[in-house]
Length: 128
Image (cartoon, rainbow, N blue to C red):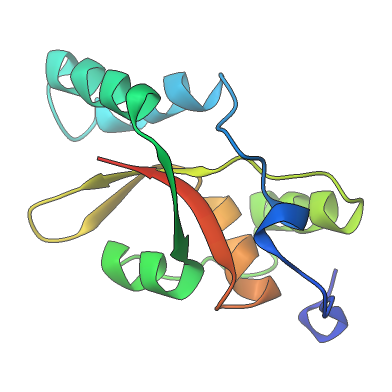
């Protein structure tokens, strides 16, 4: 889906699942273990599992993470855009507050997809 072909009726409910998928948590653990020791990473994932799903704007998540927007040509971003085009929902993003920036533990490519659809899109996420 090209950004020029954005849908005008995009809402968080039409794009996002209400709860993360089960396989998102082991993916978050793999990533967090690169940043902190395994015991701390496990604790974080357990907190993410228990945290309520909240709503934030894609542009704010991206700014807080201090990460670059992945290009629309990135294979994972393209897959997420195709999923949305086929009316399949994306899993919420898993976030951890870091000392200087927000850590996207899982869902970076989904966040970038969301930003390409509209930077003001509300994104369901778990935040600890």
